[in-house]
Image (cartoon, rainbow, N blue to C red; front, side, top):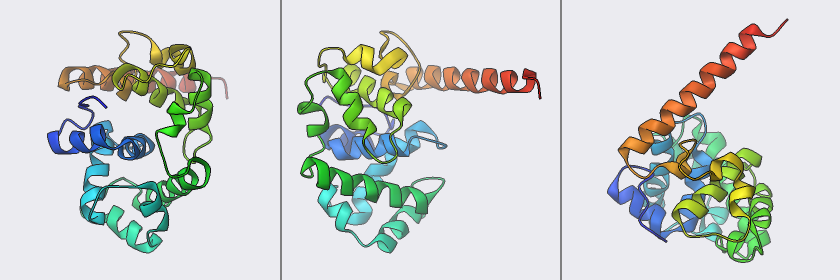
Length: 196
């Protein structure tokens, strides 16, 4: 995997770059929480659990101890309990359906549509999150099966600044954040203008 800069922290990004499960967990945590902090959390979790994250290790970990690890301080997410439980459910699914090997979600896939479907089968991965992760794999991890851009939707667009898939430095992080804020503002305005 290439050198990612999603967390904007060298140590945290090194964990993401070397461990596909850490990257997938970062994507899971990227909701209602600052992007770079969500992607820094797998490195803190690695430290708190005392070794590299594995699907089997997290799946079998005592749930209350995992919640405590998420709670911190600092907390690994705005909702530490629910996210700890969701991460554990994710890891249990990877063990049950993918033999504990995260990479099989994309290496076993014949095309982009299958990568997207595999991701959507995971707990906590709706269509949008699965599309963003498909775009991240294609744009930054050289995982480019046929049709990956189409499967990723607008997140796969070349040169876009829509999601974490487009973050390669502090400037692009700022651009993606601006895009997301503009989207929220537009959605809020549309809601306010809608007839009641």
